[in-house]
Length: 299
Figure: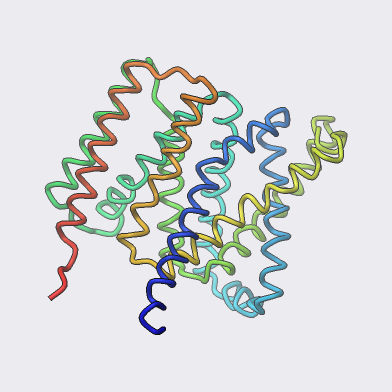
């Protein structure tokens, strides 16, 4: 009986990782369905809905004391505030990209993200890159540069998504908090801005959700669940799986988004995209191989 426990623990972790990255990968479908509302209005409702779920989770788990403890530490509050700003930027750009038929750009951004993390470690944390990591980062840069050259413009959506999520992870690393506490604090700090945004939009007659059907209002309200569920599943997976195993799942979400963009929504996959994605995929393969080579071997 005892020998089955580790396998069960790992299986649960794998299931939760699939849930987290699966929801993130299929998220464009949800934002397409709500696409007749502006990205700013959707973001505001997403923040408020997510905060209501976070508040409930904090109440159930009794973690409000931890929230109060963080709020008494200015340095941690500053880091959480920075993280909140970065994740809000990430959410807004992602919603906008889906609404404007640029899901491929979001896919490329999240493929680049692991390599951005490596670069941030070098620039901000003083970490050293291996030769393979240096080549991988250079390959990704070539891929982005080729796409910019072929399309005649900087792929800003991909770069903003990759950079904002990478910096968000760095801020969370500098001010580590339990997942539910961090989620609650981020949405708590963003909630007043979300309320102000909706108030201004309502005053200008730009708010569309209040006049929508009941079913559509419920769909918009579900954005909090779409936000909270994968984060909670991810936290559960992270507690059950080795980091190296969990890292392999991070490519599931951009791959699903890529397939949705090309096969379901009919976005154009040009030669420039092929070269760019090819360079990034090669870079990720090289980086994954390097990480595997440097893993400690069992005696």
